[in-house]
Length: 319
Image (cartoon, rainbow, N blue to C red; front, side, top):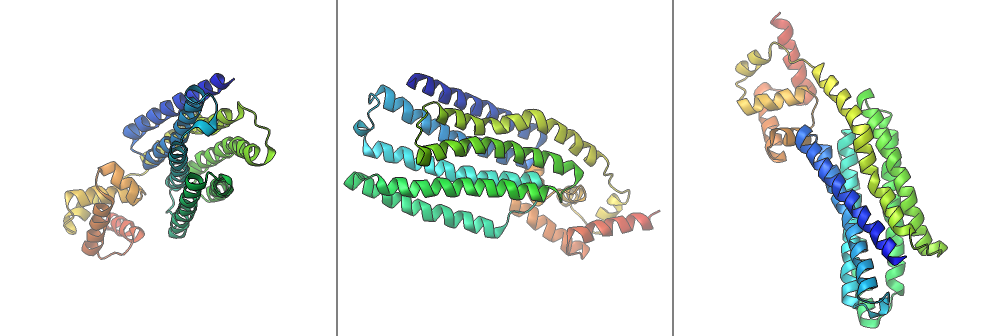
């Protein structure tokens, strides 16, 4: 039974690596920023899978399934790694949702995530110290129980909030955002059941953990294979409908716009965010902001909408 458990975790890892490679290839092909965030999320989640596989393999093959024989320093190292991976999983998922939904990340939520990570990080380090010095696991399990509950709450709140935000999005964005949130809520529902079993139900079903890890791990695979192609076709059609005005060249000459600034203005006209422009043009985020600031100074506008209105007004006068 233990070897079946290890095989399922290994299969889990194969799925994760395959999905990570596929998502990175899609990012290189389409240069959509949220695909990079999805790649980061997959890597962080599968770090949890790697630690779980390592722990199970060492426990079975080197310590004859005797946890007391395993070094407390080794156990602590694995636990610290998995807690860090869990934190990064939550933060990268949040970045992906914001990128997919094309909305700005909230500074309040960013600060909350940092405070949450620091608070539980310090608490875990203290519990590890107690565990190593006094061989007491009680404090660690209490803190980790709260950590897991808070982590899952963060994920479900983010996904449910994303569903509500999806209804205010354009037709092109609404469906892929809803599909993603629903797929991930389903996957994390089973993952949550595993955690509830471990801390509360105490059923100790040996195959449950790798299967529930797999449920959450296949979510990006399902979305990329079934939903992303439809999204990209709609996205491409929407971009194709946006035609740059004939006055763009006159606008560039009149306001002494540089070549790079002209490229950025085109991306702004297509409705792309600063982050998307950064990835499409292969320049840093601060460089994008500096160029946009220079454009505003040259043209006397203070926002993207004013810039687009100015370009369109010149198009009308040139007719």
